Length: 270
Image 1 (tube, rainbow, N blue to C red):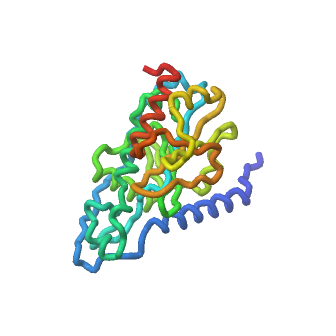
Image 2: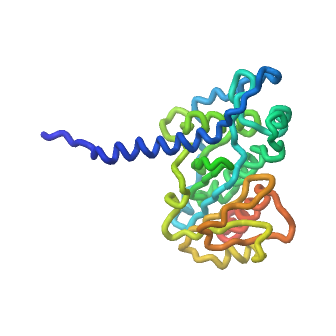
Image 3: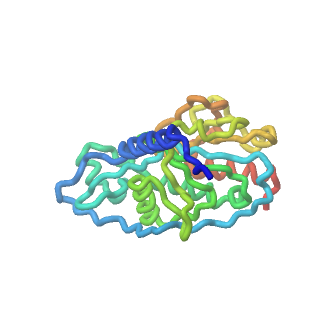
């Protein structure tokens, strides 16, 4: 019997892709380091893996929803003797020392937005197909919808630090990667029959999100791009539509909550 061999080109392609992912991740680690004036305690993650949330699979035959969280503030720096995820509350002195605006370092916005997606009835019913996050530095990662994330901010920061340093995090007792850094652009992972919808308060197209969701074709997967930052705008490139869902500025988590509620109402998810 002749032994089957894998194609050499495929192995080389995988190596090149991992190299690209590693280069993207390195951009999220700043070269600035403290000189001992601020001794940082190493963030305790100690995560061998994270739990998986069981989901209802009754709705998987319907068109599903994909979320892209853009410009998330996930940047790592060496503070004292350890690497830490920068945030405006714990590292304000460090940020000001290197002339960085603390208001730009808000990983809590990303945490709230991500938990809103994962905690929603829409997700628990199996109708969230995928969640992607792109950092301010351009690092793209995938979060599996059935991931159970840490609830406290400290442990969440430890998890994100681990993701940026190790490029993936596995499930407890399994080899499945629940969070993993992936190669740009995100469009290569989106279904063919999907439409990319950007959310921006500055958009001139103000819509009622419930009516907007109701009018969508049942066989089209909708991809919602939401900014996970304190200030700024999302990348409008390749978006099918750019909408605003309120006359008032809303947080990322609240926007996502309105979107998930609209789908839950449409599909009568109780």
